[in-house]
Length: 442
Image (tube, rainbow, N blue to C red; front, top):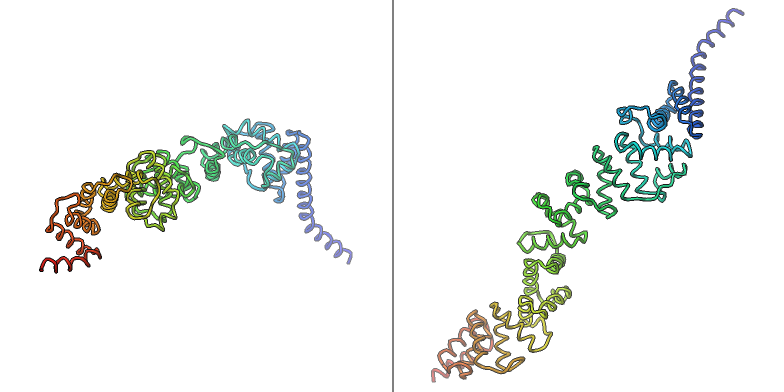
């Protein structure tokens, strides 16, 4: 019976021994890990490295990532013995790196300073981005990284210039997240890069980002003709214009003036044309004035700034703007300025061939409004408008020939123009024509 009991104890011992051994190894791994942390906190990188090596020889998965992280830091920045290939492949990712920094109030500062000295030439891109993020956020950041280096008393003043420089180090090594961050900084005007510092290729890589499309549009507006030939150039310009970039608005306006169909409301298109016209683009100015000339009274009320701009140009002697106001005056859509100014504006429009302005100018000379009364000049303007089938001018010209006002009296020409006026819809001519015919018959 006793032999059976002893045999059972032996069996249990054999089974328990590996478990106990494994527990001992786990305990020892944690023990060496804690000792390494203590050495790191004391600033003794060599001793920390030795303890971490002992911990790394154990099989405890719970501390495996953190041990590897600490070993890499000790080698890279404490002892300086890691070759470049090991630095590039070091497993500093996410929480393992954060956990490593929390180990010591001193280590974060030491790592940061060492990183600044060495990572420009060699090093993990994760560490490069960490340095960049430190400069980007400064001590005011509320991110996970801030919790790490605040706990370690690492206070770094915010510097967008330094942040951009470090992000570029990672970006040129292919880190897309660094490229995205640089694009965001450029968009927010935290960084004013040259095309060499922020290559268009990076923007094209990220053209799914609205910020990248806006920056592409800004570059086209600034004169990048290579990007301007891209099939999506108009979309990028629109993105920049809608982001209130005036240069992009001007380029969009020019495209509109050249007849390109763009998905814009009338209000937005008019605003962009005004922006371009104010910058001195003649094509946009003419397109805007053409648009104003064709507007209804209700449309003009929606764009008071445009009308104010046209008025200012007209007062400065711009004949195109004066003609625009003359055309609006002739349609009864504008009635500002002195009578003399109005006559000047009407004449510009009339000389440009506007039949309404020619007729209105004829009336002004007929009655002496803003000019000296002159029936001959009035008849000349009525004649020009009548030749363009202006029904009211044709009726006035008929009256001139009927009464001999400014032209030789001619019953035949009076009847001819009266007939033309009636044919073109003038109600006065329609009522008078039968009376003239009855008179002629008798």
